[in-house]
Image (cartoon, rainbow, N blue to C red):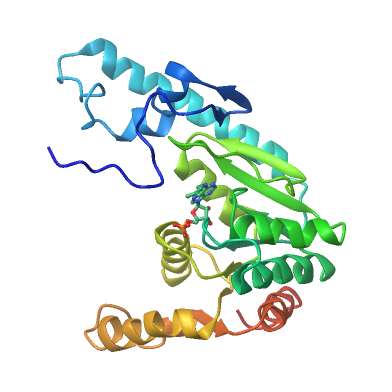
Amino acid sequence: MADQTHPSQPADPDRGPVRRGGQILSGAAAAAPTFDQLLLDTRQSGMTAPPVSDVASTTSDAWRVLRIQAEFVEGFGTLAQLGPAVSVFGSARTGEGTDEYALAREVGRRLAEAGFAVITGGGPGAMEAANRGAHDVGGVSVGLGIELPFETGLNPYVGIGVDFRYFFARKVMFLKYAQGFIVLPGGFGTLDELFEALTLVQTGTVSRFPVVLVDRAFWGPLVDWIRGALEARGMISPGDVDLLSVVDTAEEAVALMAAVQQGGRA
Ligand SMILES: CC(C)=CCNc1ncnc2c1ncn2[C@@H]1O[C@H](COP(=O)(O)O)[C@@H](O)[C@H]1O
């Protein structure tokens, strides 16, 4: 079978310690699958899907629902009192010292200065920078961490942190406790978070929810493709693309959030 190992997901069981659920794990414990893998990755060797008749495995999937439920309870409990907040997404690989990092940090700072809590995925890169910006000015800095098969952990600028085992539970929190999304340049994870929000706004599941893309040069080709392919071929309605705002600066992005918060158009 072809090696499908992702460069950022070392499969070596002898790798160094990893941090999961607030614990430092090493050796066999570090190599053990995450809860999300056990639930979803039934094709990987050692985690084969049970035959339908395997009552014990089927029951264990059912029991997993209780753990999932506990995750929602913890998230709701921690975030219920947050006040106005904006979720900021962007690449986990954005390096300190780059323009993208500075932009994310400025977004975090300006959001905090405007009275918003800053919610991120709690990881490195743009997430760290946005948390850091909020932290710089004494703002509320939230990290919703995710257990991953390789080393991760909440960045040091997270003030309120919740560690999730299931991606889907964590995604509910990004939406439920935010007044809008600011999306910085990023990869698959960022696109996933962006398109989930857009689908919910498009279908009217959430309303008055601004989705702001920062960096025209980066996002412009995607917006052009949405217009030229999705809209042109009738896959979305005319005007759906306007659910996205595209700006170049942190100042513009935060001003849009503040305007919607004060009763303007999303
Ligand atoms: C160096 C590395 C890959 C670390 C991964 N550590 C992570 N920690 C927390 N959230 C993450 C991580 N990777 C991806 N995400 C989620 O996916 C988005 C970034 O994914 P990407 O780098 O654009 O695709 C983030 O907004 C975050 O919610």
